Length: 81
Image 1: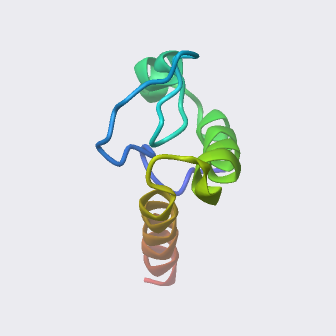
Image 2: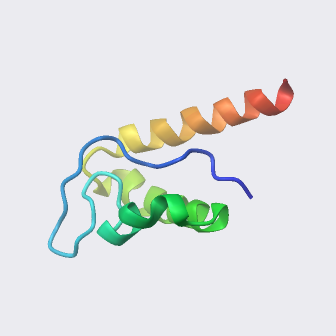
């Protein structure tokens, strides 16, 4: 399974006391290792952060959901071509 986007970053890197980004919901470790993660691991992180930070608890949940939807729609268009 290929993740819908390369990374869920919305360019608001601000971490809480638990070292979790307030905007995208990834840990410092996940951000650091993102390029080395498998597509399945990336999709699992996306699923988790959409539930936690894309639901209104994050710093900018609307931007996170929009990024995901935009990437998902772009991927669908590529498959149709």
